[in-house]
Structures are given as C-alpha cells and as structure tokens.
Amino acid sequence: MQKITIAIDGYSSTGKSTLAKQLAKALGYIYVDTGAMYRAVTLFAMQNGYIGDADEHMEDLVKALPKIDLKFVPNDSLGFSEMYLNGENVEKEIRQMQVSKHVSRISEVKEVRHKLVEMQKAMGKDKGIVMDGRDIGTTVFPDAELKVFMTASSQARAARRYKELLDKGEKVSYDEVFDNVQKRDHIDTHRDISPLRKADDAIEFDNSDMGLKEQFERLESIAKRYIANQ
Ligand code: DC
Image (tube, rainbow, N blue to C red; front, side, top):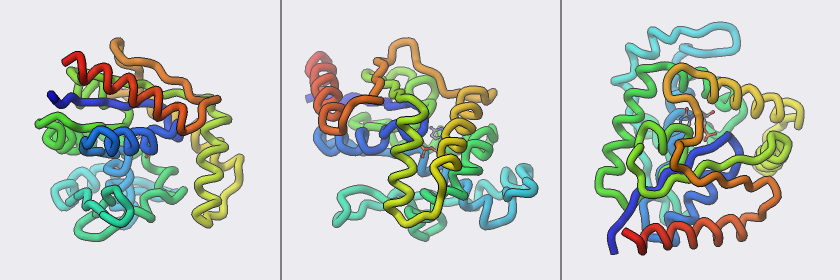
C-alpha cells in the first residue's frame, strides 16, 4: 500500500500530539512532534542566557544555531521517541511552563524556523509520516495528501494543559495557564513567517466536546480512506 504524508496543525493544547502519535502507531508511520523541536531550541536559548524573563539576545542565538544538535531517539518501553538536545534527553524539561512561556518568541525567529523546517522536510522525504505543528500543511509539506487542522475553545485547551501540568507535579495556577494559551495563540497566528493558519485544503477538526477515543476513531477512518484512494 502506498504511503502518504499526514500534516496535523492547530492551536496549542488541542491534543494534536496525542492524536498524531496514536494515528502514526496505528498506521505504522513515523511520528514527528515539531513543537518539541522548537521547545528544545528554546531550552538551549534559556540555558545559554539568550532568552529570559528580563532580556533577550536573538542575534547570539542565531550565531549559535549550528551548535544545536536535535535528535528524536526511540524509547521502546514508552512506545514513542524522546527529544535529545546535544546528546541529552530533554523530554521532561521542554514540557515545563518556563519553556512554554518563551517558545513562541523563539519560534518567530526566521533562522530558527529555517533550520527546523529543513530538518522536518528531510524527515518526511520518504512519506509514511504523521507530523504535527503549526505550519506543517502550509510550509513544511504543502503537498501532504491529508491535512488536518485542530481547534478547541481556549477554555477547553487551558483546562487540559492545566490538568497535564498538575499531573506532572508542576505548581501552576489555572489563570497562568489560560493566559499562556491566549498569548501563544496570539503570537502563533500573528507572526510574520509561517503564521498558524488553516491550509485551504485542510479538514477542520473541533474537539472541544470530543473524547480521545472518538477523535482517534474518526481520524483513523479518514486517514485510511485517503490511503486507500492513493
Ligand atoms: O505544539 P507545542 O505546543 O509543543 O509547540 C510549542 C510552540 O512551538 C508553539 O507555541 C509554537 C511553536 N511551533 C511552531 O511555531 N511551529 C511548529 N511547527 C510547531 C511549534
């Protein structure tokens, strides 16, 4: 059976990654979480003092980009790949609130986007891939056979992210998370390069009132139909 490229874009905390990961597993496809790549660059920028609460030095980050090595390393016991930054597993750190606070700013930087988009294109050259992010259907794989655009109300998304962070033991308030979701929406949809927008040929998927099982079953049947029609 011919393999296709599946692009899943949408707002933060719409559950894109969970769904994309499940779908890739069911189809035997590679899964790539591009948000993890932007988060790892953000962590690198934080570790080196290029971004913080008080100031930023983007020109220094741009100069240091060749020193950033990103890899997805499969973890068989977890059943998915984890993000490594310069040889170190940073999967936990990149999900922390501090990284979420700075990641949209880092992902506005043209040179950062250029580096990551080139890597993403290379990962998908043989198809058989499910990639999720903000610009996958518009910039990374404009010719993807199946494009999905996920949305949900900001309240539903903040509630999900808040629960996730509490479950991980982070001390955050709901208001802080809600504020972060709204700020990221604004920056993601208003930046100059590759802003988040639905590709004309993407299927819109609003999951505010949909459970995980229902979302997965719907998406899997759509994907199988697209694959069969190749
Ligand atoms: O999917 P996520 O919330 O982990 O993504 C983190 C941030 O990275 C998000 O606020 C915007 C940015 N991002 C992006 O600009 N382009 C992508 N393809 C993926 C993520």
